[in-house]
Image (cartoon, rainbow, N blue to C red; front, side):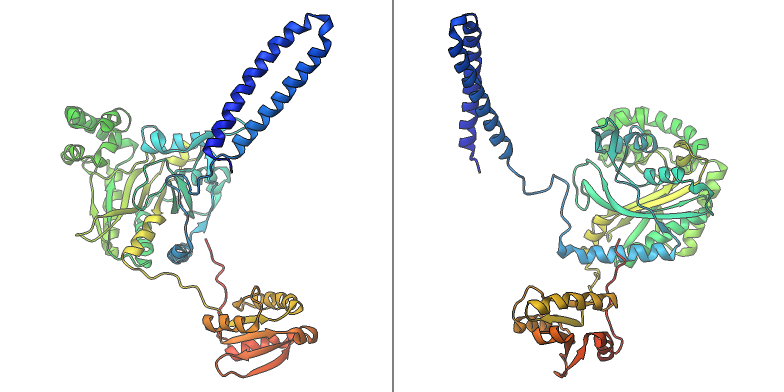
Length: 499
């Protein structure tokens, strides 16, 4: 590898070479005017060519030896094997409850045209103004890494004609999202979300069902202390009057607002209500409340939602300052908070109604509701409360082999066992039978299948009962039946339901 001092020497030589090339070119031009100096011209040309070649090599060396950063960019991270039991448990619960509530999986792409998010999320939001990863492709398309799921799912709903499907249409997704925000505890620039959406119904009972689903999911992974923050921000019919009233109030307190909220006053005044700055919180505490200015339809909808939540006995409080950070919400908005009274509370996710988003993107009017959960923060909370993790099933069968021919035959036997649903362990890289049996013992295998040179030639296998110590020799054709007989049907199989 080229050291920093060597790099400096290479760059110095490169600069000198360029200077000499320019000088040689000047000499060459003057020599060309003299017909008797052809030999000198040829010599100078050869010198210039050699210098150019040397300069190219120097450039190549400095380019190749650029230092490699052995870490991901800020805000990105590896999900290491030690954390996977938490993630596996979380994915398992998401898939199970999604199935129980009738949701079908959809996987929108991680890259969409950037104007999809600009139009749906709205100008003046933090996501659009500061947090989106946008870039232009080689073909000139302006695209963005998805900062959230809902816009892409609505685009897919319109593109694939899902409006003709029986209502309600229930979809869920799981995957990474990207926001160029300052990394926080449990929140990374690449973080994972589980997203649930229902299209085609506007009844408040679906709002309650989504909150119930979120509650079951969070408590199902062992987080018992949580609370729902609920609010209604109205619809376009009543929100404009409320917003005018709010702006008039905030204008009178403008000098007390932070610099960010002074800008929000022009672009997205509702966001001032959930600003975390102390002086803005004091202003927001006395601001007009949206629930006091709802139209009849929104008022009835919110009243029914609260009645359903009371019937379900779910823990909630009405938070008149809750507005959520996306412009497409209407009527119901909610967040899931966790933490005991003595602990710092964290938001685990949230959602709400977006009855006008599909229509704004070019589809027909489609009432909808959805929510998303931050999986990174859920895992962090699972660790804090010492929640149960997913335990990988341990194989009860171990396959040992001795010799090259036996190794080849064992590959086929291994595949046969897996094809029959039997979870089997092996140690093909180990040479001695003794070392392989130690591995089988450490794994707690009940049966060890042994294939040596003789067994490989005879198409047989030795079945050793690790509990009783007895063993028998059976043909390969009868191996599966013999294993099942010893285990008496108590066979662990691989769980392929991975999200």
